[in-house]
Amino acid sequence: MSSSDGILVVMEQTRGAWHKMSWETLAGAQQLGGGMPVTAAVLGHDVGALAAELGGKQIAKAIAVDHALLASYTADACTAALTQLVAAVQPALVLLPHTYQVRDFAPKLATRAGRVLVSDVIRIEAAGDGFVFVRQLFQGKLNGDFRAAGAGPHFASVQAGAYRVDTLAAGSAPVETFAPALDAAQIRARVEEPFRESARAVDLTAAELIVSVGRGIKGRENIGMVEALAQALGAELAASRPICDNGWLPMERQVGSSGQTVSPKVYFAVGISGAIQHQVGMKGAKTVVAINKDPNAPIFEIADYGLVGDLFEIVPALTEEIKKHK
Amino acid sequence: MKVIVAIKQVPSRDSRLRVDGSGRWIDPTDLTAEINEPDAYALEEALQWKEKHGGEVVVLCAGPAGATQTIRDALAKGADRALHIEEENLTAYDSLRLAELLAAAIRAEQPDLVLTGLQSDDLGYGQTGVILAELLGMPHGTIIMQTEKTAAGIRVKRELEDGWFQFVELPLPALLTIQSGINKLRYSTLMGIKKAKSKEIKALTPAALGVTPGGAAPLEKLYAPQRGKQSRLIEGDARKQAAELVEILKHEVRAI
Ligand SMILES: Cc1cc2nc3c(=O)[nH]c(=O)nc-3n(C[C@H](O)[C@H](O)[C@H](O)COP(=O)(O)OP(=O)(O)OC[C@H]3O[C@@H](n4cnc5c(N)ncnc54)[C@H](O)[C@@H]3O)c2cc1C
Ligand SMILES: Nc1ncnc2c1ncn2[C@@H]1O[C@H](COP(=O)(O)O)[C@@H](O)[C@H]1O
Image 1 (cartoon, helix red, strand yellow):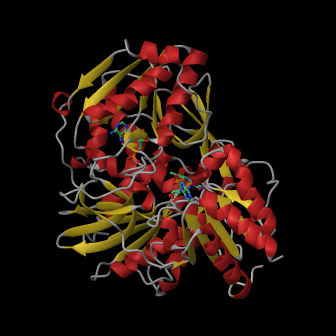
Image 2 (cartoon, chains in turn yellow, brown; image 1 turned 90 degrees about the vertical axis):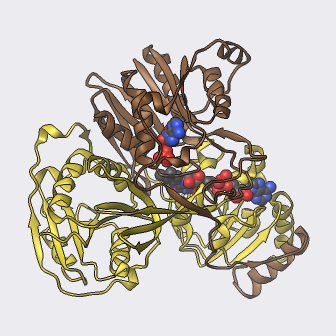
Image 3 (cartoon, chains in turn green, cyan; image 1 turned 120 degrees about the vertical axis):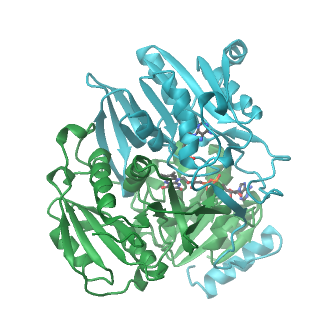
């Protein structure tokens, strides 16, 4: 198993279900092209069926990294297993989806290999004897190029939505099993079963209209102004994370990667910058209206209608106008 | 119990960012700075540990001379002392090299617990804590929303995606990356600010720590992104904007 010019994609699954971002990452690897063979690996216990599914994509090889100690995720076991896999495959590039789980182990994996992980990249280009990775800085306000040259393996994790799943090409690839040598004594964390907080009192996923408020609102005392807009529209009230962190609205109204994923007919983003962790929760909205004083705010990248200006003027005016028309 | 908290100073959130002449970083003129948001929560968590279990809270910051402002604020909130790795140009280090710099300072302190924020607002690598854990040989937990001392070490609540959580127990010493919202931030008191003036800020240099700038994948170029989808901008004063949007919502979007 040696292909030092290839790409190794580490797919993510939880109890037999794929993480969707894995497919996006695999699509990215296929697009990188340049004749670089793609190997895709899935970790876990009894993951043969998942590996077989991988074998149905246009890749050079699918690998089931199988061990009883990989049944529930720990950074220690995952890092040990992948260190062995990378040594066996010898890829030029290891690509991972930038999920919470990858955030937990990939920096450790790269560090153990004495390498740098370029995290949360939005674009990858082959450049000479290495790669240029584009990633966002300052919460999406600026982009940066990071060049990794010379012999691999290079490591990068790919941002949600950077590549499209519907471009994934089908094919037929051999499927192998890789049995890492793992020892229970290596695993320092004692993990408990994942759980969800008690049933959500507010279900934003079914809402037709959502008015969502961000830090632009400045203080708890101003939330009422946005609430009035939501009321006039007959919309649900939602928020970005800092609003809930500050206790200005309850956690269950949070939209984003650690909150709810919503897909209303219209999503009003009021004083929200549009960081990627917020975007992943609302970009399924049919129409996005953004009210923000900063014309360069990342939210305008996904907004259909943009109102650049002071929300403290626009929101009351909008509330009044809507009341007139109802 | 000795707790080290890594805090970073970043440009204030509402800053107008301009790329500087080198094309590699932002022009600091007219910019104000503040503590990286999750680091403020990490500091608060450390202070609460000290209140419950005794010991010492040491803040660690790598950054320019101007970062003493953020360090003093942390001391005013109740940290006992500080380590300041003086480095004007942090972007000359890649994520691994920067973590090596921080690790060298941490090693000498032999802490029981190291806390970092889960991500910085400027570089946003989201990985310094985990690299540190590997370099220091410590177990780690990421995106932590709760901590609790146990007989065996520490039990923490990890935030997973989509509203899921998980408890994990780790032996000490351990490293945690703290998520915003884990606790309620305190304000500094006048007394705290006064006391901070006499607290120790130990200056360290990369050279003395045996780390040189560089690395395999540092930032090469910084630039404004090309915006993909162009929003349809609704212009005019607030009244005009509101009236036009309502027309659109009625007739184009058909939402009201
Ligand atoms: C692992 C992880 C998970 C996360 N999960 C989530 C999540 O689930 N949900 C989430 O939302 N975030 C999440 N975040 C945080 C996210 O990265 C951003 O920090 C957050 O979304 C920013 O919220 P905001 O847009 O309200 O605030 P800011 O980024 O501070 O933006 C405020 C905006 O308001 C505008 N503004 C200010 N004043 C006015 C005014 N008077 N009129 C009009 N506009 C004004 C500003 O121009 C700015 O664009 C997560 C981060 C991490 C690292
Ligand atoms: N220069 C620095 N000085 C102190 N701590 C830092 C520094 N850079 C990063 N950190 C810590 O590492 C965390 C994650 O940063 P990052 O990996 O850049 O997203 C931050 O929240 C800080 O706690």
